[in-house]
Length: 348
Length: 175
Image (tube, rainbow over all chains, first blue to last red; front, side):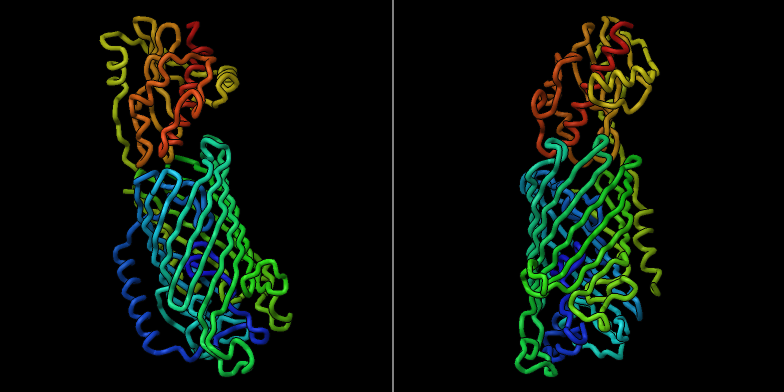
């Protein structure tokens, strides 16, 4: 779905599974050069600045890399957070996608937290599709690329605002429940993500389980593809619409002071258009599973998660002969084999 | 997987995570002098038996974190007990003083290592425990008011005091 979701929570809509080729690479080759130059310059500037600052921390201290818990910052408390996500590997070719998020959060009340952040991305891919063509990952889908050559580019992905409201606390109400809303805006991108967060603690709150259900809408402005059917929407510049629905489950145990280990499971589903109840619009489904480790100190925390794509992927949009799924792993434009995410944060 | 060096960076960052610094508000000796001024305190340390642990768990609903009971007997018949509960990241060390009849006289926070939740040190919050006895209801949100922003610490200290009172009744009351 949106850039923020892609960066923050994984899975966005497989932007566009062309009925024949499955990829959208050749249809957006008329982007204005001045537009590209502007965003390229901005993206590099912010990327370098955020890397040099290496500012730690975000919303509330995350036990997990991808799954949210219901904890929020106390009223009037703030934190900064830096995420770095490396998305690596396809069934073929080279695929490297580096995404960063720099976030500042504040507790408006004890149960309502607001955050703002900047998302940047860098991609370096070649021959990363089952056909052997080079196709940029989803967050770069609005850039032109040569299917026979390497694609390498950095950009400002989006800026986002995030609000989390905790309805009940796992410490006093048995089960924690929170609602999350995140609008994002980027160059030729608009996104809206809503999430239901559940949390249940055991063993003096040292054992934590969390579940997320996420609905994300994404609008991406794609320029016309002169090779497309002149009567089709793809022929002219248009807003491509997508929907993501993700389900996540995670558990973590604090095995000694400050340190927790656990695991995360994420199921990501995508639809073309904005109706996730329309079965004929389904495009992709993938599963990710992997371990997570968390360190939490008095003011500093760090979380590192590795996710592996499980061989249970589905490609609903293409016939078997043109499927993105190879050996059970999907190679659609918002998926990869491995995800590595580091979050570091600092409480003021 | 060609750029393996990328993956070393986050691991290295985690490895550099500095241990948290404890804030010691009161040492055990300072807490003893504050809670039992000018009184001699005699160590009455115990190692809890499996049966005692089970009885404490049944009476309080809480499992003792340690089988080593750190208790001192005061000259006036009161008790000074040092205990720990789980905090957000590390243990919170606190002390409970009981009068000769087993009623809570005071609760003091000795070590607190968290960025948030330090409101549990507020005397007005700790005052709520005074007079509580084993067997009485002692729950956060009802008998003990919660402090927003310090919920986890409030909950665990409340649970801890309930466990200490059960421990007194089962192990120390007839000593």
